[in-house]
Length: 375
Image 1 (cartoon, rainbow, N blue to C red):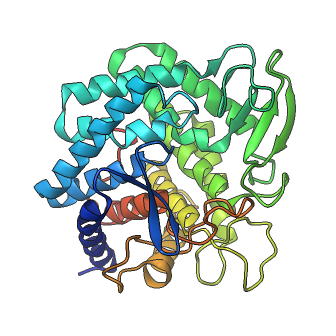
Image 2 (tube, helix red, strand yellow):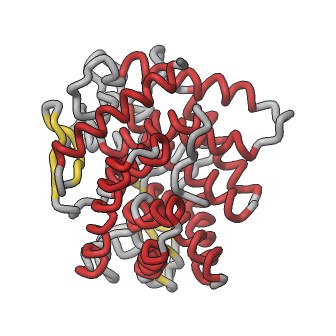
């Protein structure tokens, strides 16, 4: 049994126990080694349904399927209630719930719900500045002209909607957001801003900044990881070589800065001391992104060996040093994730997105699934 398969089996066993622990609630982030639960009100809730669908896809067992269906049903209510309208993370919510169900079961109602979610995300498009507004309502003084790098992972929902409906508008918005992100969020040295501000009336660039990172000019590791994966996915849908090149550049920047144990700190520019927080979730996201990137690079590309070695070192570091595979009663799959070190919110605990991407990466390494960002 490979180390990846052993870790997968552990993840399935923990998820089975968590189904009973969590009931109809959704895990968000950890606090003192226990997940904080909510009634499907957080931007993170799709990751739990995504874990359930991955476990069902891997095992074929009804216990995961029924739990995944039950969780996905809750997303119908959320869209109807309008609570998905407050931010751009609709791709995180519905790609890993309704779209996952469509991919695995070809359920017509799930397809319809996913398309409805894509239409909801389109309502955050602001034509004058030419961007998908990340947070807040239209015209908001602080956030009306603000983009964040995380949004790259919401764009596959729009690319997919364009693909299945034949409507180019979804794809055009997604590509415009990817282009703006590439131009303004990725710096010349291949590092990244977390956020960027534009004049919401004219579209004029104002400044880069951060919400989660160490400081405005630093490189928040989870943001860099979103870029690696997000641009690789934009390439998959568009075959625009600039996206592939950007994903590659950002991946090299990420891997070149791995610490000795191969799991990154929360910000590449934060002072490194024994007390500096890690972000295991950033390493898990980047691993998925690099595995996606490798699918698109030619076999003779000179970067292949470096990327393959880096992603294997990263995943081995997560499995050996940060996973809970030797603690069968643990709720989370990997420890030492950070939600917001800057704000003191769960700076060192379980992160449900970290668990999801860790599981997706393991599935990719075992050639069992590639997640639900595309069919």
